[in-house]
Length: 454
Image (cartoon, rainbow, N blue to C red; front, side):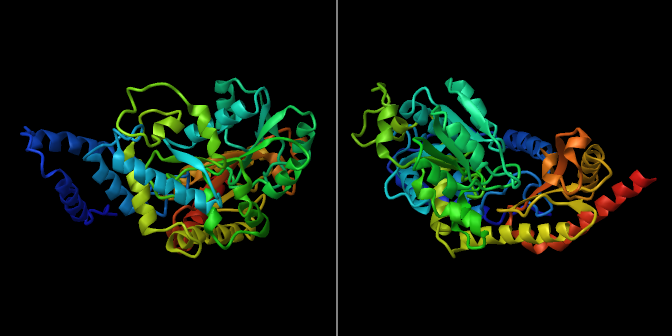
Protein backbone atom coordinates (compact mmCIF):
# COMPACT_ATOMS: atom_id res chain seq x y z
CA UNK A 1 0.00 0.00 0.00
CA UNK A 2 1.07 3.62 -0.57
CA UNK A 3 0.88 6.02 2.36
CA UNK A 4 -1.13 9.19 1.76
CA UNK A 5 0.94 12.25 0.72
CA UNK A 6 -1.48 14.40 -1.30
CA UNK A 7 -2.41 16.38 1.81
CA UNK A 8 1.11 17.79 2.12
CA UNK A 9 0.11 20.55 -0.30
CA UNK A 10 -2.65 21.55 2.16
CA UNK A 11 -0.09 21.65 4.96
CA UNK A 12 2.14 23.94 2.90
CA UNK A 13 -0.72 26.40 2.37
CA UNK A 14 -1.61 26.29 6.06
CA UNK A 15 2.00 27.04 7.03
CA UNK A 16 1.99 30.00 4.65
CA UNK A 17 -1.25 31.23 6.25
CA UNK A 18 0.21 30.90 9.76
CA UNK A 19 3.32 32.78 8.64
CA UNK A 20 1.18 35.84 7.89
CA UNK A 21 0.87 36.37 11.63
CA UNK A 22 4.60 37.09 11.86
CA UNK A 23 5.08 39.30 8.77
CA UNK A 24 6.19 42.28 10.87
CA UNK A 25 9.31 40.43 12.02
CA UNK A 26 12.57 40.61 10.04
CA UNK A 27 13.73 37.44 8.37
CA UNK A 28 16.36 35.38 10.18
CA UNK A 29 19.04 34.00 7.87
CA UNK A 30 19.22 30.23 8.14
CA UNK A 31 21.83 27.84 6.87
CA UNK A 32 20.11 24.57 6.06
CA UNK A 33 21.88 21.55 4.61
CA UNK A 34 18.92 20.00 2.82
CA UNK A 35 21.00 17.16 1.37
CA UNK A 36 22.18 16.08 4.82
CA UNK A 37 18.67 16.33 6.18
CA UNK A 38 17.29 14.25 3.33
CA UNK A 39 20.01 11.66 3.83
CA UNK A 40 19.27 11.05 7.52
CA UNK A 41 15.52 11.30 6.96
CA UNK A 42 15.73 8.53 4.36
CA UNK A 43 17.66 6.47 6.89
CA UNK A 44 14.83 7.00 9.38
CA UNK A 45 12.23 6.11 6.73
CA UNK A 46 14.01 2.84 6.04
CA UNK A 47 14.19 2.02 9.73
CA UNK A 48 10.48 2.77 10.09
CA UNK A 49 9.65 0.06 7.55
CA UNK A 50 10.26 -2.35 10.43
CA UNK A 51 6.77 -1.90 11.88
CA UNK A 52 3.46 -3.68 11.89
CA UNK A 53 0.98 -2.05 9.46
CA UNK A 54 -0.94 -0.24 12.18
CA UNK A 55 -2.80 1.90 9.66
CA UNK A 56 -4.20 -1.05 7.67
CA UNK A 57 -7.43 -2.97 8.43
CA UNK A 58 -5.36 -6.19 8.47
CA UNK A 59 -3.89 -4.90 11.71
CA UNK A 60 -6.49 -5.89 14.31
CA UNK A 61 -4.28 -6.48 17.32
CA UNK A 62 -3.44 -3.86 19.90
CA UNK A 63 -5.10 -0.49 20.47
CA UNK A 64 -3.33 1.31 17.67
CA UNK A 65 -5.66 3.49 15.65
CA UNK A 66 -4.21 5.80 13.01
CA UNK A 67 -4.73 9.50 13.72
CA UNK A 68 -7.10 11.31 11.41
CA UNK A 69 -5.49 13.08 8.47
CA UNK A 70 -6.54 16.48 9.78
CA UNK A 71 -4.97 15.68 13.18
CA UNK A 72 -1.65 14.82 11.53
CA UNK A 73 -1.73 18.03 9.52
CA UNK A 74 -2.69 20.23 12.47
CA UNK A 75 -0.03 18.66 14.70
CA UNK A 76 2.62 19.21 12.01
CA UNK A 77 1.43 22.79 11.49
CA UNK A 78 1.77 23.56 15.21
CA UNK A 79 5.29 22.10 15.32
CA UNK A 80 6.55 24.98 13.18
CA UNK A 81 5.96 27.11 16.30
CA UNK A 82 6.19 24.31 18.88
CA UNK A 83 4.03 25.83 21.64
CA UNK A 84 4.23 24.68 25.25
CA UNK A 85 0.84 24.57 26.99
CA UNK A 86 2.28 24.77 30.48
CA UNK A 87 1.85 28.55 30.58
CA UNK A 88 0.18 31.14 28.38
CA UNK A 89 3.60 32.60 27.70
CA UNK A 90 4.51 29.40 25.92
CA UNK A 91 1.28 28.73 24.08
CA UNK A 92 -1.34 31.46 23.90
CA UNK A 93 -3.42 30.19 21.00
CA UNK A 94 -2.89 26.49 21.73
CA UNK A 95 -3.86 26.95 25.41
CA UNK A 96 -7.14 28.54 24.38
CA UNK A 97 -7.72 25.71 21.90
CA UNK A 98 -7.03 23.16 24.64
CA UNK A 99 -9.61 24.68 26.94
CA UNK A 100 -12.20 24.69 24.16
CA UNK A 101 -11.48 21.10 23.12
CA UNK A 102 -11.55 19.81 26.71
CA UNK A 103 -14.83 21.65 27.34
CA UNK A 104 -16.35 19.79 24.39
CA UNK A 105 -15.21 16.46 25.84
CA UNK A 106 -16.67 17.41 29.24
CA UNK A 107 -19.97 18.22 27.53
CA UNK A 108 -19.90 14.83 25.81
CA UNK A 109 -19.75 13.17 29.25
CA UNK A 110 -22.61 15.33 30.51
CA UNK A 111 -20.66 17.57 32.91
CA UNK A 112 -22.43 20.90 33.48
CA UNK A 113 -19.24 22.38 34.94
CA UNK A 114 -15.76 21.00 35.01
CA UNK A 115 -12.05 21.44 35.48
CA UNK A 116 -9.81 19.57 33.07
CA UNK A 117 -6.88 19.53 30.73
CA UNK A 118 -4.90 17.34 28.37
CA UNK A 119 -2.06 15.09 29.49
CA UNK A 120 0.64 13.02 27.83
CA UNK A 121 -1.63 9.97 28.07
CA UNK A 122 -4.01 7.92 30.19
CA UNK A 123 -1.40 6.97 32.76
CA UNK A 124 -0.71 10.59 33.70
CA UNK A 125 -4.42 11.43 33.54
CA UNK A 126 -5.29 8.61 35.93
CA UNK A 127 -2.41 9.58 38.19
CA UNK A 128 -3.82 13.08 38.54
CA UNK A 129 -7.32 11.74 39.26
CA UNK A 130 -6.05 9.39 41.98
CA UNK A 131 -3.78 12.09 43.39
CA UNK A 132 -6.78 14.42 43.77
CA UNK A 133 -8.81 11.56 45.25
CA UNK A 134 -6.08 10.88 47.82
CA UNK A 135 -6.21 14.52 48.91
CA UNK A 136 -9.99 14.52 49.25
CA UNK A 137 -10.21 11.03 50.77
CA UNK A 138 -6.96 10.82 52.76
CA UNK A 139 -5.83 7.49 54.21
CA UNK A 140 -8.50 5.62 52.24
CA UNK A 141 -8.10 2.75 49.78
CA UNK A 142 -8.44 2.86 46.02
CA UNK A 143 -10.25 -0.16 44.59
CA UNK A 144 -10.64 -1.32 41.01
CA UNK A 145 -11.61 -4.57 39.34
CA UNK A 146 -9.06 -7.29 38.65
CA UNK A 147 -9.48 -6.47 34.96
CA UNK A 148 -8.82 -2.74 35.44
CA UNK A 149 -5.66 -1.41 33.86
CA UNK A 150 -2.54 -2.28 35.84
CA UNK A 151 -1.66 1.41 35.94
CA UNK A 152 -4.05 1.95 38.88
CA UNK A 153 -2.16 -0.45 41.11
CA UNK A 154 1.15 1.03 40.00
CA UNK A 155 -0.01 4.63 40.46
CA UNK A 156 -1.37 3.84 43.90
CA UNK A 157 2.06 2.50 44.81
CA UNK A 158 3.75 5.65 43.53
CA UNK A 159 1.34 7.83 45.52
CA UNK A 160 1.57 5.68 48.64
CA UNK A 161 -2.14 4.78 48.56
CA UNK A 162 -3.50 1.40 49.68
CA UNK A 163 -4.92 -0.46 46.70
CA UNK A 164 -7.35 -3.40 46.55
CA UNK A 165 -8.47 -5.48 43.56
CA UNK A 166 -12.15 -6.41 43.24
CA UNK A 167 -13.30 -9.72 41.76
CA UNK A 168 -14.97 -9.79 38.36
CA UNK A 169 -18.13 -11.49 37.15
CA UNK A 170 -18.60 -13.93 34.27
CA UNK A 171 -18.28 -11.08 31.76
CA UNK A 172 -15.09 -9.64 33.22
CA UNK A 173 -16.89 -6.71 34.89
CA UNK A 174 -16.52 -5.55 38.48
CA UNK A 175 -18.41 -7.84 40.87
CA UNK A 176 -20.86 -5.73 42.89
CA UNK A 177 -21.05 -8.23 45.75
CA UNK A 178 -17.28 -8.23 46.27
CA UNK A 179 -17.23 -4.45 45.93
CA UNK A 180 -19.83 -4.07 48.68
CA UNK A 181 -17.86 -6.38 50.96
CA UNK A 182 -14.90 -4.03 50.60
CA UNK A 183 -17.04 -0.90 51.01
CA UNK A 184 -18.54 -2.28 54.22
CA UNK A 185 -15.13 -2.13 55.85
CA UNK A 186 -15.23 1.66 55.69
CA UNK A 187 -11.69 1.67 54.30
CA UNK A 188 -12.50 2.55 50.67
CA UNK A 189 -12.26 6.16 49.49
CA UNK A 190 -12.28 5.79 45.71
CA UNK A 191 -13.80 3.24 43.34
CA UNK A 192 -12.26 3.13 39.87
CA UNK A 193 -14.98 2.24 37.36
CA UNK A 194 -13.62 1.00 34.04
CA UNK A 195 -15.78 1.73 31.01
CA UNK A 196 -13.96 -0.44 28.51
CA UNK A 197 -11.26 -2.67 29.95
CA UNK A 198 -8.18 -2.91 27.78
CA UNK A 199 -8.20 -6.71 27.78
CA UNK A 200 -11.79 -7.41 26.74
CA UNK A 201 -13.60 -4.09 26.45
CA UNK A 202 -15.84 -4.96 29.41
CA UNK A 203 -17.94 -2.17 30.93
CA UNK A 204 -18.20 -2.06 34.72
CA UNK A 205 -21.78 -1.81 36.11
CA UNK A 206 -21.85 1.91 36.90
CA UNK A 207 -25.61 1.97 37.75
CA UNK A 208 -25.08 -0.62 40.49
CA UNK A 209 -21.99 1.17 41.79
CA UNK A 210 -23.94 4.43 42.02
CA UNK A 211 -26.60 2.67 44.09
CA UNK A 212 -23.87 1.55 46.49
CA UNK A 213 -22.75 5.16 46.73
CA UNK A 214 -26.12 5.99 48.27
CA UNK A 215 -25.16 3.72 51.16
CA UNK A 216 -21.39 4.23 51.39
CA UNK A 217 -19.19 7.32 51.17
CA UNK A 218 -16.69 7.12 48.32
CA UNK A 219 -15.57 8.91 45.17
CA UNK A 220 -16.17 7.49 41.70
CA UNK A 221 -13.38 7.81 39.18
CA UNK A 222 -14.17 6.56 35.69
CA UNK A 223 -11.28 5.21 33.67
CA UNK A 224 -12.58 5.36 30.12
CA UNK A 225 -9.17 5.94 28.57
CA UNK A 226 -10.03 3.29 26.02
CA UNK A 227 -13.82 3.30 25.86
CA UNK A 228 -14.91 6.85 26.65
CA UNK A 229 -15.97 7.90 23.18
CA UNK A 230 -18.50 5.05 23.01
CA UNK A 231 -20.70 7.45 24.97
CA UNK A 232 -21.72 8.71 21.51
CA UNK A 233 -22.73 5.46 19.77
CA UNK A 234 -26.23 4.08 19.41
CA UNK A 235 -25.58 0.34 19.09
CA UNK A 236 -24.37 -0.70 22.55
CA UNK A 237 -26.19 -3.41 24.46
CA UNK A 238 -28.62 -2.39 27.19
CA UNK A 239 -26.28 -2.75 30.18
CA UNK A 240 -23.34 -0.93 28.59
CA UNK A 241 -25.63 1.83 27.38
CA UNK A 242 -27.04 2.24 30.90
CA UNK A 243 -23.51 2.73 32.26
CA UNK A 244 -22.58 5.39 29.69
CA UNK A 245 -25.77 7.34 30.38
CA UNK A 246 -24.54 7.99 33.93
CA UNK A 247 -21.02 9.29 33.29
CA UNK A 248 -22.09 12.75 34.45
CA UNK A 249 -22.38 11.41 38.01
CA UNK A 250 -18.68 10.60 38.30
CA UNK A 251 -16.31 12.73 40.36
CA UNK A 252 -13.60 12.44 37.71
CA UNK A 253 -13.15 10.83 34.34
CA UNK A 254 -10.27 10.01 32.01
CA UNK A 255 -10.32 9.49 28.26
CA UNK A 256 -7.51 9.09 25.75
CA UNK A 257 -8.03 11.06 22.52
CA UNK A 258 -5.01 9.18 21.15
CA UNK A 259 -7.09 6.00 21.14
CA UNK A 260 -10.57 6.40 19.64
CA UNK A 261 -10.25 10.17 19.45
CA UNK A 262 -8.12 9.97 16.29
CA UNK A 263 -5.14 11.81 17.78
CA UNK A 264 -1.38 11.23 17.54
CA UNK A 265 0.39 9.97 20.67
CA UNK A 266 0.40 11.21 23.34
CA UNK A 267 -2.88 12.83 24.16
CA UNK A 268 -4.83 11.95 27.30
CA UNK A 269 -7.46 13.96 29.12
CA UNK A 270 -8.56 14.21 32.76
CA UNK A 271 -11.75 15.99 33.83
CA UNK A 272 -13.09 16.74 37.31
CA UNK A 273 -16.74 17.47 38.01
CA UNK A 274 -15.90 19.98 40.73
CA UNK A 275 -13.74 22.92 39.56
CA UNK A 276 -12.76 23.49 43.21
CA UNK A 277 -10.31 20.60 42.78
CA UNK A 278 -8.04 23.17 41.15
CA UNK A 279 -7.11 24.52 44.57
CA UNK A 280 -5.19 21.31 45.24
CA UNK A 281 -2.73 22.18 42.47
CA UNK A 282 -1.75 25.52 43.96
CA UNK A 283 1.98 26.19 43.90
CA UNK A 284 4.39 29.10 43.86
CA UNK A 285 6.49 29.60 40.73
CA UNK A 286 6.00 33.23 39.64
CA UNK A 287 8.73 33.03 37.03
CA UNK A 288 6.38 30.86 34.94
CA UNK A 289 3.36 33.12 35.01
CA UNK A 290 3.88 36.78 34.29
CA UNK A 291 2.01 37.78 31.17
CA UNK A 292 -1.62 37.34 32.18
CA UNK A 293 -3.92 37.19 35.20
CA UNK A 294 -5.92 34.48 33.41
CA UNK A 295 -5.66 30.89 34.64
CA UNK A 296 -2.73 29.02 33.14
CA UNK A 297 -3.14 25.33 32.35
CA UNK A 298 0.06 24.67 34.27
CA UNK A 299 -1.75 25.79 37.42
CA UNK A 300 -4.18 22.84 37.19
CA UNK A 301 -1.78 20.17 36.00
CA UNK A 302 0.87 18.02 37.62
CA UNK A 303 2.80 17.96 34.36
CA UNK A 304 4.82 20.99 33.43
CA UNK A 305 5.85 21.19 29.77
CA UNK A 306 3.14 19.76 27.51
CA UNK A 307 2.92 19.73 23.73
CA UNK A 308 0.67 22.52 22.50
CA UNK A 309 0.59 20.66 19.19
CA UNK A 310 -1.61 18.00 20.83
CA UNK A 311 -4.21 20.63 21.68
CA UNK A 312 -4.11 22.11 18.18
CA UNK A 313 -4.59 18.67 16.61
CA UNK A 314 -7.47 17.77 18.94
CA UNK A 315 -9.22 21.13 18.50
CA UNK A 316 -8.95 20.88 14.71
CA UNK A 317 -10.25 17.31 14.65
CA UNK A 318 -13.25 18.18 16.80
CA UNK A 319 -14.05 21.10 14.51
CA UNK A 320 -14.12 18.74 11.55
CA UNK A 321 -15.80 15.88 13.42
CA UNK A 322 -17.94 17.24 16.29
CA UNK A 323 -18.52 15.03 19.34
CA UNK A 324 -22.24 14.55 18.79
CA UNK A 325 -24.47 11.50 18.55
CA UNK A 326 -25.37 10.54 14.97
CA UNK A 327 -22.45 12.59 13.65
CA UNK A 328 -19.69 11.32 11.39
CA UNK A 329 -17.36 10.64 14.32
CA UNK A 330 -20.01 8.64 16.21
CA UNK A 331 -20.96 6.77 13.04
CA UNK A 332 -17.39 5.57 12.58
CA UNK A 333 -17.33 4.23 16.15
CA UNK A 334 -20.63 2.46 15.54
CA UNK A 335 -19.05 0.68 12.59
CA UNK A 336 -16.25 -0.60 14.81
CA UNK A 337 -18.86 -1.89 17.24
CA UNK A 338 -20.74 -3.61 14.38
CA UNK A 339 -17.52 -5.20 13.17
CA UNK A 340 -16.93 -6.67 16.62
CA UNK A 341 -20.45 -8.07 16.75
CA UNK A 342 -20.05 -9.67 13.35
CA UNK A 343 -16.71 -11.26 14.22
CA UNK A 344 -18.10 -12.56 17.50
CA UNK A 345 -21.09 -14.08 15.72
CA UNK A 346 -18.83 -16.02 13.37
CA UNK A 347 -16.58 -17.20 16.17
CA UNK A 348 -19.51 -18.30 18.33
CA UNK A 349 -20.96 -20.44 15.54
CA UNK A 350 -17.64 -22.12 14.66
CA UNK A 351 -16.71 -25.34 16.50
CA UNK A 352 -13.00 -24.50 16.36
CA UNK A 353 -13.40 -21.61 18.79
CA UNK A 354 -14.68 -20.85 22.26
CA UNK A 355 -15.94 -17.35 23.10
CA UNK A 356 -16.47 -16.37 26.75
CA UNK A 357 -19.06 -13.61 26.23
CA UNK A 358 -20.35 -11.10 23.72
CA UNK A 359 -18.23 -7.99 23.20
CA UNK A 360 -19.55 -4.82 24.80
CA UNK A 361 -17.47 -2.41 22.70
CA UNK A 362 -15.15 -3.28 19.79
CA UNK A 363 -12.78 -5.80 21.40
CA UNK A 364 -13.32 -9.50 20.70
CA UNK A 365 -11.56 -12.34 22.55
CA UNK A 366 -11.68 -16.05 21.86
CA UNK A 367 -9.87 -19.30 22.63
CA UNK A 368 -8.94 -22.24 20.42
CA UNK A 369 -10.82 -25.39 21.43
CA UNK A 370 -8.44 -28.16 22.44
CA UNK A 371 -8.17 -31.06 24.86
CA UNK A 372 -6.72 -28.90 27.62
CA UNK A 373 -6.20 -25.29 28.69
CA UNK A 374 -2.47 -25.65 28.17
CA UNK A 375 -2.89 -27.03 24.65
CA UNK A 376 -5.38 -24.30 23.78
CA UNK A 377 -2.90 -21.66 24.95
CA UNK A 378 -0.14 -23.22 22.89
CA UNK A 379 -2.34 -23.28 19.78
CA UNK A 380 -3.33 -19.64 20.30
CA UNK A 381 0.32 -18.60 20.30
CA UNK A 382 0.94 -20.58 17.14
CA UNK A 383 -2.13 -19.12 15.41
CA UNK A 384 -0.95 -15.64 16.40
CA UNK A 385 2.37 -16.30 14.64
CA UNK A 386 0.81 -18.00 11.62
CA UNK A 387 -1.73 -15.23 11.12
CA UNK A 388 1.08 -12.64 11.12
CA UNK A 389 2.73 -14.57 8.29
CA UNK A 390 -0.54 -14.15 6.38
CA UNK A 391 -0.55 -10.38 7.14
CA UNK A 392 -3.32 -10.71 9.73
CA UNK A 393 -2.07 -9.12 12.94
CA UNK A 394 -3.90 -10.13 16.12
CA UNK A 395 -3.05 -9.86 19.82
CA UNK A 396 -2.79 -12.32 22.69
CA UNK A 397 -4.51 -11.95 26.06
CA UNK A 398 -4.41 -14.19 29.12
CA UNK A 399 -7.90 -14.61 30.60
CA UNK A 400 -9.22 -16.57 33.57
CA UNK A 401 -9.87 -20.16 32.49
CA UNK A 402 -13.05 -20.01 34.59
CA UNK A 403 -14.61 -17.92 31.83
CA UNK A 404 -14.53 -21.05 29.67
CA UNK A 405 -16.04 -23.57 32.09
CA UNK A 406 -18.29 -24.73 29.26
CA UNK A 407 -15.16 -26.02 27.54
CA UNK A 408 -12.84 -27.03 30.38
CA UNK A 409 -13.21 -27.69 34.08
CA UNK A 410 -10.65 -25.09 35.13
CA UNK A 411 -10.43 -26.49 38.67
CA UNK A 412 -9.51 -29.98 37.53
CA UNK A 413 -7.26 -28.57 34.82
CA UNK A 414 -5.11 -26.88 37.44
CA UNK A 415 -4.52 -23.90 35.13
CA UNK A 416 -5.96 -20.51 36.08
CA UNK A 417 -5.22 -18.71 32.82
CA UNK A 418 -5.84 -19.53 29.18
CA UNK A 419 -4.09 -17.63 26.42
CA UNK A 420 -6.66 -16.19 24.03
CA UNK A 421 -6.58 -14.43 20.71
CA UNK A 422 -7.82 -10.86 20.78
CA UNK A 423 -8.83 -8.29 18.19
CA UNK A 424 -9.34 -4.55 18.64
CA UNK A 425 -11.50 -3.61 15.69
CA UNK A 426 -10.88 0.11 16.16
CA UNK A 427 -10.94 1.16 12.53
CA UNK A 428 -14.35 1.72 10.89
CA UNK A 429 -12.84 0.05 7.80
CA UNK A 430 -12.78 -3.21 9.75
CA UNK A 431 -16.50 -3.57 9.10
CA UNK A 432 -15.88 -3.85 5.35
CA UNK A 433 -12.96 -6.22 5.89
CA UNK A 434 -14.67 -8.83 8.07
CA UNK A 435 -14.78 -11.38 5.23
CA UNK A 436 -11.06 -10.97 4.52
CA UNK A 437 -10.14 -11.07 8.22
CA UNK A 438 -12.22 -14.18 8.76
CA UNK A 439 -10.69 -15.91 5.75
CA UNK A 440 -7.15 -15.18 6.95
CA UNK A 441 -7.98 -16.30 10.50
CA UNK A 442 -9.61 -19.50 9.30
CA UNK A 443 -6.68 -20.28 7.03
CA UNK A 444 -4.21 -19.68 9.85
CA UNK A 445 -6.11 -21.86 12.32
CA UNK A 446 -6.48 -24.72 9.85
CA UNK A 447 -2.75 -24.63 9.11
CA UNK A 448 -1.83 -24.76 12.79
CA UNK A 449 -4.33 -27.50 13.64
CA UNK A 450 -3.17 -29.59 10.67
CA UNK A 451 0.40 -29.48 11.98
CA UNK A 452 -0.82 -30.24 15.50
CA UNK A 453 -2.71 -33.35 14.36
CA UNK A 454 0.21 -34.52 12.27
